Length: 189
Image 1: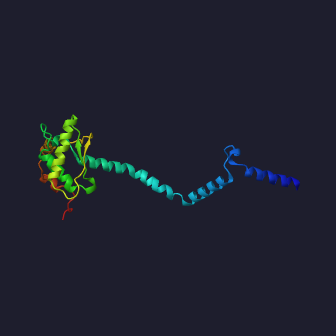
Image 2: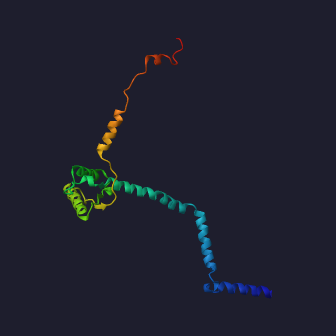
Image 3: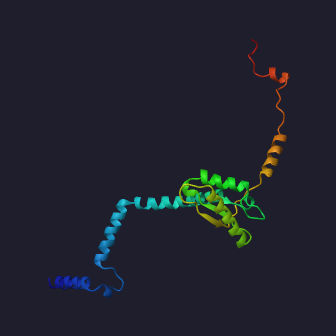
């Protein structure tokens, strides 16, 4: 009996000692809180983690989509006059198309950086002036500078490929008369 009393006193003493005396061991309250947290997590699993997994899976696609829109809304070197850095006719058509057909949240115009800061600023000003002439409803779109050159190829190149492909097509021919009657007919009817 006396032995049990001292064991109980010893256990109560250990439980009541401040946490600093536990040398890094968690208190009963911390253990109980952690147990409760783990129980709730295990009961809800895997739902809290599915949304994180979905987001991690979708993130690269969002980046690819943004890069694709940047590619489509970039005004490259070939759309500016070499001497004045003003938009040429093709550049005006491209800017107008972007501001007309791109979704409103994707109408940011990217101007490809020139060989020096003066050329770049002339290009940006040229695009801003053309956009101002269009008298758009609402605020004008943002015009930003980009270093990412959209890899385009001239139309002449694709025209040459198309001509060569058409030139290599053989003329259509009907099968010869001898080959037409010899195969799997009606069998003597």
